[in-house]
Each structure stands twice: as structure tokens, then as C-alpha cells.
Length: 133
Image 1 (cartoon, rainbow, N blue to C red):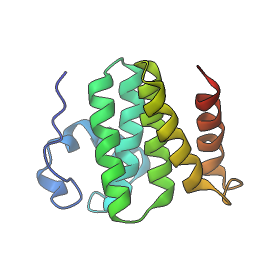
Image 2 (tube, helix red, strand yellow):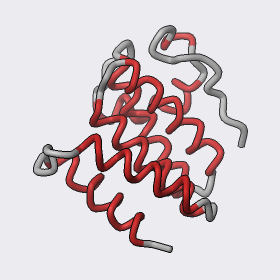
Image 3 (cartoon, helix red, strand yellow):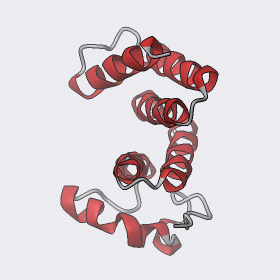
């Protein structure tokens, strides 16, 4: 399956073909389509679903776009979540150096905020990923 995310969805979300794929996530959680931060969150969710469906190309594209959007908006939570996902993908593909770099950056972003429920799993998953060799 070729990924259809061809533009920055935060800038022109209504015309993005990715909406067709992500629409179930929007309706499920009631996320506002025009919000870039929520779109990054939906992309991360979509990426994790894509990994489950063994579509690593779509997952990587979605995570890279989510990381770009979250960095643009300086949203460290979503950046950490996207980096953690990219670490998992790199680990699955045998790129240990890239996986470690992604996990370490993810941990750095959540440092001092580890007790926030949405971030606990990012820390745990990143530490677990670093421990694998």
C-alpha cells in the first residue's frame, strides 16, 4: 500500500487524501479536523495501527509527518510519541543505531514529566527498546 500523505495536512487538511484513511479516528474521538496538533495525534494513532497491519511504509510516513508537525508546533508530547514509534520501526528493521537515537531523543523530551499518564508508556517503551540488542 502506498502512502497518500503528500502535503502537510495541518496547512490544508480539508484537501488531504490522508483524511480518507484517518476519518474513522476523527469520528471516534471527535478530533477537530482543522487542528494541526490533533492531526499529529491522529497520524501517530494511524501509524501504530499500520504497524499492526504490517504496513511499515505507511507507518513510517505517518510518524515522520507527525514528528514534523509536532516539532513545528513545539508539541513535545507528540514528538516523543512519534520518536518512540520511529524507534520501534527502526528496531523491527534491525537498525539498532537509529532505534537507539530515536528512543534517547524521546526520553529526553519526556524528562521531568514522566508521571503524566499519556507519557508513561513512552518512557517505558523507549527504555525497553534501548535495552534490546
